[in-house]
Image (cartoon, rainbow, N blue to C red; front, side, top):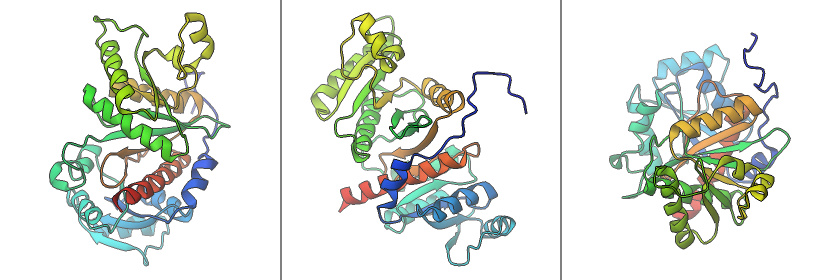
Length: 316
């Protein structure tokens, strides 16, 4: 198929070696695959298991799971299989996570809203009272293992200041778990000037002030425009001074439209590998997509493995 847009990358994404190595040094987590009765999610969990990144627990309609496994020649006879069709699957996964029987939850053949409806409400018991969850993408460019963490491009649609503060906190914690001792975080806006007519610039300034008091382990800049986030030269030309300029480890977006567009441009236009997960719950939650390449699925599994170990350490 010929693509219309010549700027789309022809590079083949690769799961970052550093991320995979960090994950494989940890105990293998039990991963609940929710609504596992389809070929694509079973291929994904099999890849993760074969890479030493997951011990699968299959949840869903038992007949569909067995049929899909047979279709791809996947021997699931030694795996734990739980019959919980349709919306029951997410509820069952939450129950297993509460009991400590699974360490990570992965989305299978189910709509994201249905999947999360069984996991994120307070009644599911996976969130402490008042805790806000956020999604973080771990993005690496071709030929590089250094990650850029992007939040939130997949979960919170139009996040409040408080939700963006939570997303920033989660991303800083994850960055440190990945070995970035002092993360540099950028609060994306169209300008570095706080202007009342542009709401996001004022909100970003408020979040940056909050971070100075509450996240002393990170350097946080905002509002800051994309050219200053990406280019030290642009920052120099504009006279903008910050350790974050041209060297960000984290980008916090103002809304899901901006974040989702940025994530997809990096993947499609730059050939980046993007693994991702929902953080802030008792266990990491992987929102895998049917359009994800194998490299992204492996990166997500590795990221989930690292985050699961972090969560278990925090609970012990």
